[in-house]
Amino acid sequence: MAVRVIGLDTAKHVFQVHGADASGRAVLRKRLRRSQVPYLRMLLIHGARSVLYRCVTKTDSRSRWIAEKKKTLGTTKACVAVANKNARIIWALLARDEPYRAAA
Image (cartoon, rainbow, N blue to C red; front, side):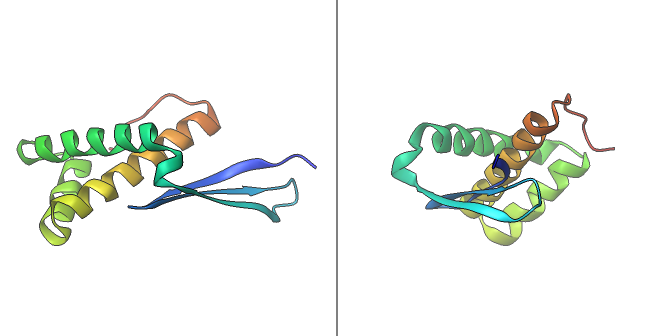
């Protein structure tokens, strides 16, 4: 039975990895604490913080989404939201072996 990873959820304190077999049945749900993946979390959060501070002067759709999150959630929670979105984008690029295409 081959398991393939189909999801990665990031939150403030926990990463969750989800996997399924060929039939689509969930066979893996693994929670990783912050202490288990500190370097990855640090890179995602620092990258998100950098994006958050530079989105103010930009007008593309992603920057507008980030600015709205910052306004409604605050800086720290918006950082986590952007890090989560970046992690999902990275996972999708690696899973599909495709180059990044910016949203139109």
